[in-house]
Length: 145
Image (cartoon, rainbow, N blue to C red; front, side, top):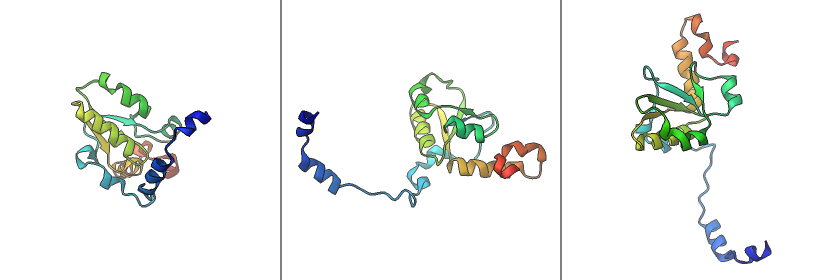
């Protein structure tokens, strides 16, 4: 181990640290970082909606009919998914879903990221629920109860 550590160019490490860019994630504008062609704010008719969050988060609330898929497994395996479907992805803030949508679009799929991530997906659920109590399942339990 010490032999490997001795091979490290400390000057190169110091230069890399000095040249680093510090990003304040609390002030980071996710929407501005995502290509507008990747994002939508509606669910197209017949689209497959995929939640890329962790299984526990999915169980707590998800878009009705959405399926949960592991982000990394989706990145590795989407080439085998049906190409004749439209795909809409969402995650916590929209970065993972935008990345997957971008890769799929590059491969010829009709795929989009839901603009604004989970927060905006839940806002859409509230708007679509409107005054119809039959659509209460669209809301997260914390909002519904």
